[in-house]
Image 1 (tube, rainbow, N blue to C red):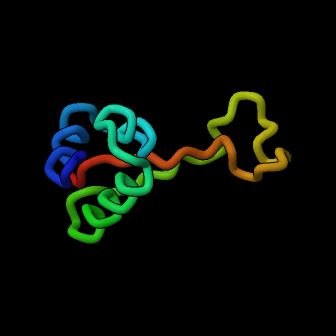
Image 2 (cartoon, rainbow, N blue to C red):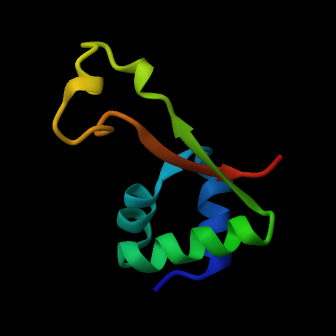
Length: 79
């Protein structure tokens, strides 16, 4: 089980990561990783980065049934 320090250290080493990537690397359940990321954000240690769906190469993201399946939520340490 990972701690807040483990998540912070992984972000420091890897740069930007999705919550699912952190979950796999730290073998920690995804809901727990998301909760800890939100806590780090509340503490001012991490920042959530939403990649715009405009970066989709096919251009079909705006019309897909899921709506924003191409947009990604990344996490990084606050500078």
